[in-house]
Length: 284
Image (cartoon, rainbow, N blue to C red):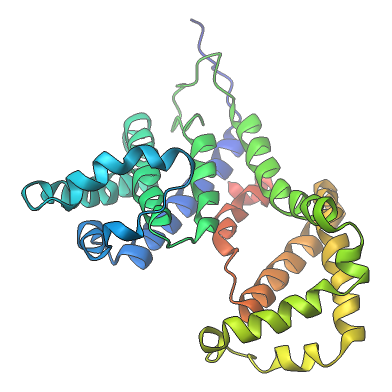
């Protein structure tokens, strides 16, 4: 099978930065959720809290194995392998083996976390990015991509498609279930009010926490913000135009920081993909 010997070095540079960013964020996520000790975390979770979603229901035998005293050591082994393989991915060592190992262990560890009610599903963005990156030709000057694998430019396009789809599909989802009423009937004001009631304790210590109350008391402002959010997400593919890329990226960061501050909802796991929007000169 003929090998691709004409990989674009600039695109490879962007992918290398993206790889380092994504897997560093994955390490942070692992330590944040499990404090580096997946096995001990799992021992604290009662079996009565097991509520799997989708394919993770097949992991029940693994849960029993990891919680049994005689085989609980396997959980520590999973933690060690996860940390070792993710670090290997950060530096690009033994990429084919380490990337596939990290992907499998990510599905296991974060899949079990979500199946025990700790639903921080925004980190699934990092897992989706892994599916794309595991095919990427990180060659370090050597061709490793066979003809059935995407070349470096196609991999960047897939990652950009993933980024854009997160926002564009969010708008389509709003339109699908609520139509333009999501904006015209000021659903955002209702959402802010409900969130302050149900998550008051969680939001109390956040910066600008009281600012949400100001917004709730100003329906004209929240109405304007509703239209802005819907149109911002719906028109997000405009980021592909060179002149609009930077303004949209800056707006995106502020948009997500506001979401995190006012609602306590964390959609920031896509930020490690920022290098995909660099220019080729900036990657060199």
